[in-house]
Length: 131
Image (tube, rainbow, N blue to C red):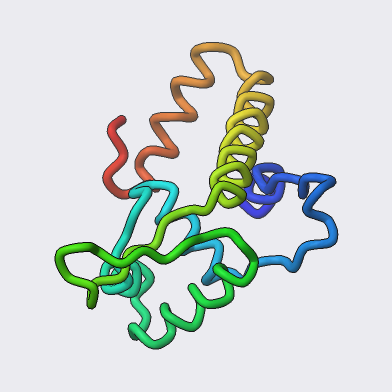
């Protein structure tokens, strides 16, 4: 599993080499945003299973890295939403494309029957998998 995870980790884009890296919690938050696009701070804290204060501190860091933006909801300014910045969207897209390419490369060594068996087996390990 570690080998597969390592192969799915994208190489940093050349233009981002001088940028600070993200913590595991920050990466989890970015992944959640990648699935939902916009989250309230309360939703994000719930997904990450951390206190709201921890989520707020982490988002402060991601805002400073120019990866996310905060937005206030017009009808209730107490509600703060978080979404990718333009830079964050570009990096997220790069990560997705890199992971898909790595996954395709890993599966390329299997014939169609073996791929089917592999996908059946791995779906048993992933909760909520459609297979």
